[in-house]
Length: 139
Image 1 (cartoon, helix red, strand yellow):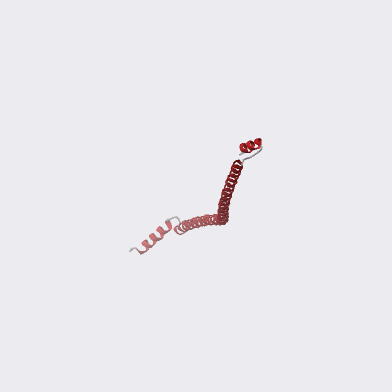
Image 2 (spheres, rainbow, N blue to C red):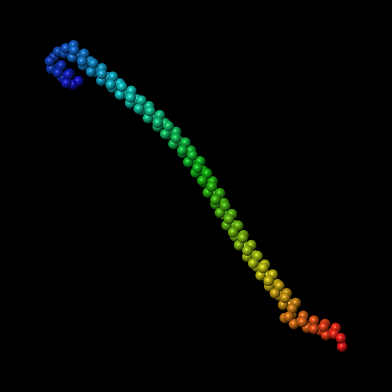
């Protein structure tokens, strides 16, 4: 187009055919530009729609992550409470075990003491039986 305008301006006069050709070229460029602009507007609209969809999806995922974090925080609190409860139970179990061992030892010591006290070393029962047998024997 620039060549045609330059050629027309050098001759001074432009013929009707050249003018029509220049107008046709300008009109063609105008339609091409309009088509490109419409296509760019469609691309922008599609991009905006896609961007809106992505933002909506990201918003939804953010909500899911927020709920997951809240659930995790709650679970962490519950785990801490359970951990403290288990420690308390373990401490009580050890105390109960120690008490049971002490009671068993006390019972064993009691029976050993009882056996020694009643038996008197083991001879007093034998002597009393011998005395009874001698007293009941015929002369």
